[in-house]
Image (cartoon, rainbow, N blue to C red; front, side, top):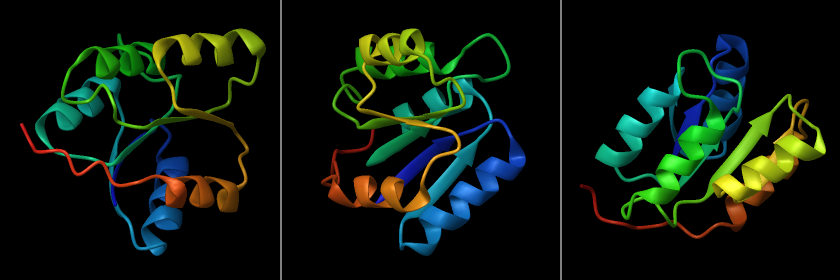
Amino acid sequence: MRILLCEDQDAIRRMIEALVGASGHEVTGVRTGAEAIELALKEPYDVVLLDLMLPGTMDGFEVCGRLRSDPSTKALPIVIISALDDKESRERAERAGATAYYAKPFRPLELLEYIGSLEPANRPAG
């Protein structure tokens, strides 16, 4: 599957890229919400892995909401991976359209199992 990963911390991004990539998935990593939206609207992905606390003007909640509001990405699974583990953040992510929520530190095998349970979106590019 093609996976878009939006994580601003280099070490965490590289770790998730290695973990998910070693399972046979193609992973594209970006640092900002703007980059994630730009790529997700331009190229077909099967899953988005999204941090909530991102640099710049757009946090993960907004990225999630924007992807949900676009017809080409509204059904795309969006998996939150965040250090925010409070009820309010989880509810806000759910309202924004998140498919699943993993708090850092997360269990890598659980994340891989969840990704493996998703069907590839197979949506056309553009």
